Length: 158
Image (cartoon, rainbow, N blue to C red; front, side, top):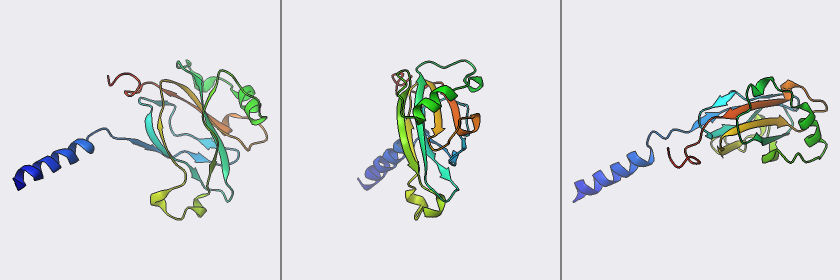
């Protein structure tokens, strides 16, 4: 009986820790710069630990800008929309995911195992923009655009 219980627990452990690996990305942010490490993600299920190596908290926003993938989205200038959002205007076509999320400086992180800048995502297919909210002007350094190409959670487990 003990062997059977041991095998059941082992099976539960293996199934719960299976190969459904979660990607951990580490975007670097400051008031005027954001560096998202990917332009395309095969799966929208991932986690991020935002790294703020400055002395002050930084506000960022993640928005879905299109429910379909925009061709060559990294060559499109999104500054008009970025400036509008920073000035408190709403863009009806853009859906906020995280709006004005405060990113704590790394020097203030007391426990790396309970990181305050850790965020888990499960994003559907589309094109997204990750932008700083504190910058006075817009340029390609203070926003990053990336595409999510798939998500098994939204595709019925395919």
